[in-house]
Image 1 (tube, helix red, strand yellow):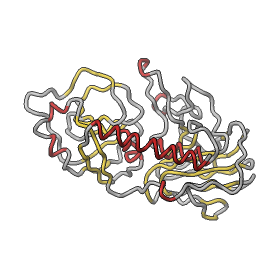
Image 2 (spheres, rainbow, N blue to C red):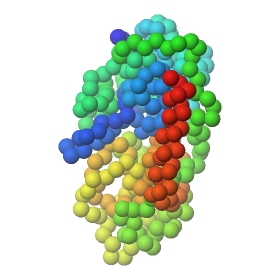
Image 3 (cartoon, rainbow, N blue to C red):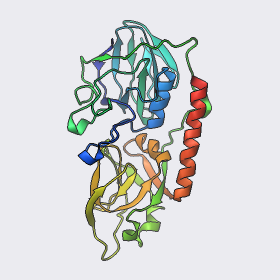
Image 4 (cartoon, helix red, strand yellow):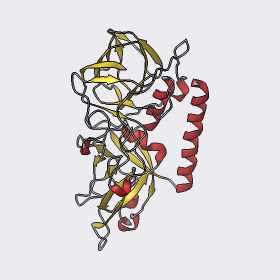
Length: 314
């Protein structure tokens, strides 16, 4: 069922779900929503299973014309969504009618927002996922970001009960200007014994060269120990690995890379990956050292929070 016409696509708006799993050995990365919490909650608000396809909206959002009645929900970065020029709150459902104009202007807090529609956005499954892998031109809508004139379809109709669903305020993340990312040293932290302490006390800045493949930082050089190799035999990587390339500027790997040959000083914990997704170019970033036991505890806290949200919204 056709649900929206794209009048203006925004800076980079792609179709994503929670990712493409099980194909790393073929060189196919996970892809999927960079902020999985915001993606999941958008779907829950729209009455969907958490893995339905949504629009991931980066910095500047699209303008869409509704082609039928639908329930929508916007989460993540605050972008000032309007329907027919009337302001509409985020982290809640909104009903749109045929002919309504949905405009999502620009992020004022955070970097990426997620728009869900009841039934989910309907595009073909590629390797068990609807996520867009832009660098390889597959998945999503023709393997690319939205362009003017695209027609967006939605899946099976799901009718929400009245009144609209609203996420309680205590569950809404606060996107702060300075981002603190908790990280576990390694796996090659022994290459940086002289630089490890300063790495965890240094303030970095997100650069404009960041993308869905990696968040590039700028700051004081992270120097390898004398005699430590500047590169390693290429090995599998995971989202959150912090690579130190030859120029000494950290790169936090995200969801569109499978292997790498640079040594990794630390790894951002799963619970803080959404914070990277919401980092704007120019945002200051600091790292805080934690243990793997603390990382597991924080992950469980996040899952418990999601479980509470599921009970509220279902």
